[in-house]
Length: 74
Image: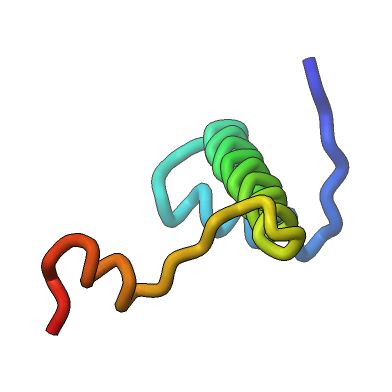
């Protein structure tokens, strides 16, 4: 088991969200945590790519270059 102490305002917001969606607070929290972890993973991956771009380790192409290479140039 895992427990968490929320600030009163967060608790009210969670109560409202759970009520509005017809789900339990526990189910609502599970979904929010899963989404938050997915977002954190995406952000870390994006940061890693940005670091490679800034250090010159990642090749970057302009939209115009990609369109030209694909025969989609205007």
